[in-house]
Length: 303
Image 1: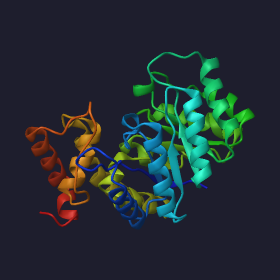
Image 2: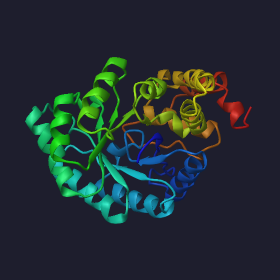
Image 3: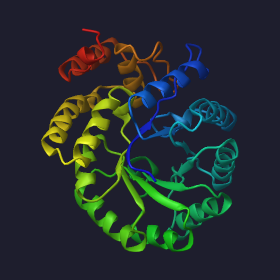
Image 4: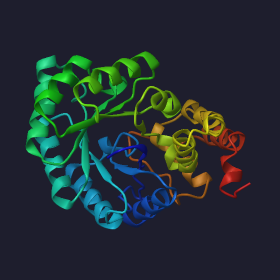
């Protein structure tokens, strides 16, 4: 059901910091027209941690209605409390979202039993597909294969994982472990540079932050690989790899992506919510250099 490029959309804001519904709908249209296979709303790239529950529910309802089944909408429901995650997942199901993603509660360390209980409670509370989002750099927990297999035995609506661990061995053992339980279980990489590796290992695709600025590169790479044109796939990867230096630009991750969108003419405002801050002039200049070097400024016709 899920394959290819799932775009983790940024959440665009007006200059006063309120969510800009019109801009977010326009960005969703841009991603859809670029050929992505799914839209991921309010993930880490979507700055979920800076919005309250009502704001999140309001944006989800707006995007689901606007997309109108043109492609699957997957809703991020990460919180530090299981009860809040259940609320967000039930709301997403109620407004017609196609799937949800949940992560381990961050900030404090959970036992394996507590991690399993968190995901099990959520999976039991909804009928739509659930993706687990494994992002140990921020959650503090790297979900083990043993935990994942335990959950799969009891909860068939847990259908996939977004795995943000930059390791080929991790991806290989992950895919081997889950496919022995469910041949259709979906494994997506959350690392922008690991798409080809994931596909070669038998995974399903990618959830790349850079899809907000260059979705066609990821889409073309998947198409080339699936058609057996591995030379073209490698060329796409080489193009993509030049853009990955944006993650080295000093500043908030969300500020960098949004500022890149402004430079490329894909957004009018790079506003983020505090504690994130706008980029400094030095970081903005460095970002432009990276985008020019990667050919993305020329690609958008803004040389």
